Image (tube, rainbow over all chains, first blue to last red; front, side, top):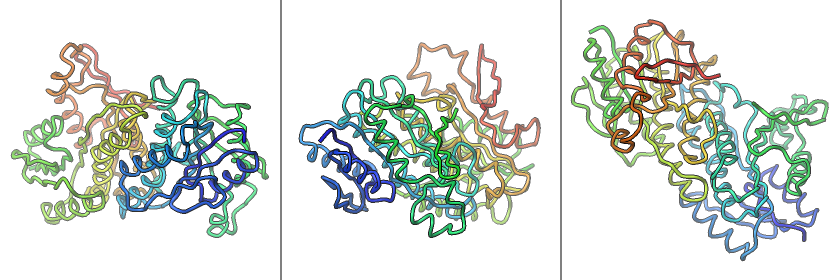
Length: 234
Length: 234
């Protein structure tokens, strides 16, 4: 066993791919999700009815328990979701859901990283390329992702609470190649979708300290003909 | 009476200044706040224990009632608050409060504008100049304000739900010259703080269609020696 990582959203499509990839590379892997990931060494299941603070408290307590005094090499937050909708109807409903799925998970991951990440460790959050501009057709989603981008920039700043030498980035996917996306967009050009294994591979490299981006980078994942390139947003 | 405006946060320092300024200029003024504003023509008081969706429903129903079929010339959202803190302690608590104070109010204002603003009307939200960069010492505040900036850009986009020809901006104050800020920062250079009357004056002009900024603008309020200039963020 060469290190320890925690995957927030470890039972989602990207999260499960990350759990498998780190396991295959001899890491101890903890999963945090609404559902159990049987493949993980420890699987923390969050009750659905908790508020933000309660969820933070519950996660910190469980993480403390499963780590038993050890520290983490990486915190990988790939929890999230998507909802469309403009401001004319159901904005509060949609935005509230997006907030829970993307921002609660990201902020709790940040707090976990402050307490349990090693010096020089790595934390990644999940933004969205679309939220670099206005998102009139998916306003709640855009607000949540903009908040994640801001959190990323803040964590990279001085006295953010992260351990010394730790780095933080966000990945900004355009579209991830997941079974759900294939189901809902069967006629899209899959060659422009980012493979999950590609993302998991990047996380593993960065965890090991290889080709690390700059702390605070918002990394657009631009895939063309099946090849993915990174482009840091300004 | 030359028009109708709604002030979200109408009992706060800036909100009350706006209520007074519009009243002095012969507008019908509605206030939405946790507390009554006696000067307003209609004062909608929001119970403190409502969730986001419930608050949206309650506000829409009350606004419908007080407008009695009329439309608004402007929706002015100046509700907000401030909390410091990095990611190491109480992030969920601080971010949750900031979200309620800045983002719930902004999103509900957006939905009110979609339903009750006139064609060509004006809506303004309140961002923060600090949130144009990372905010490691006030992470929850930065996330909430980044979400408001994103909401502003989204509302300016096509099919956002705003009425035709309506414009949306956010003001991005550095520091507003309020009694609370004077109390907590008694030794600051007040000449760099933006006077509330200045902001209320800008809102009135833009409501009347004078010197309107571009829709979607994030307008930094830069005050020097008591003189305030606007600078649109990129």
